[in-house]
Image (spheres, one colour):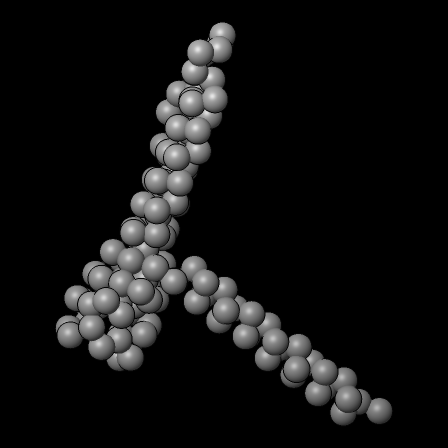
Length: 117
């Protein structure tokens, strides 16, 4: 698979995760509206559950994270499904990389402290 195909499928994975999250917000809105049906008062609207500017920024960041994770792991990705899965898991992968680095830093500091008199 070519590098840019892997990156594109990774971005698609990030977008798919964001679409699932968006769908969840729509389902929550549907439930709120269903509870209000037949009762007095205004039904909650789409604008009550969505913030287009922030939602767009989050979606773009997910797409970027998905593309970035796929780019970093391009040599290990063997197919389009794997690239999509890497892209969809990108936020969790990067959190794990950060945690691993923090653990390595803590171990190094502990070793340095043990060596001091």
